[in-house]
Length: 187
Image (cartoon, rainbow, N blue to C red; front, side, top):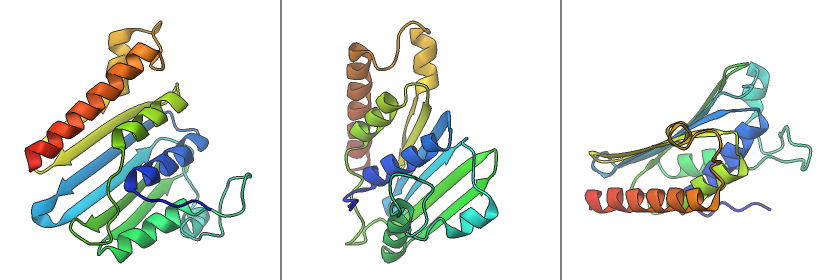
């Protein structure tokens, strides 16, 4: 059984859903606003999207499009967690255009899962999906960090893959450093 201990694991699950749906571009937005007591996480993709009937059933744990198992727990767990933590959950989708999943939480709710290893999760998404472009935008109060693999690919050129060990080290270092800077800026 899948257990989601932090929000980065939910992000990984949603990214997997997106790539399975043929997405080539993934936008991940995190907005931490302690003053408003709000944390929101949003993932948008340009995959196949879902028809209205599937969209109505997607938060049912007994519904999945995967053939490797008969249940789909990621979306239902995220929805339940958001609602239990004083927040809300939304998923919208347009066939042929993509899907957007958003979960919001009370920032200081005692049961809100931590963000987790965001740098490691983003790295796994990038390495595991070499043709996927990822745009990551993280706000903490007035601070902002944006990481876009399209910009990195443009700088590197087509002959250097993002999964090159030196590039991976650079990506991990950049993500870790920038996320730590955001965290300390907010403190």
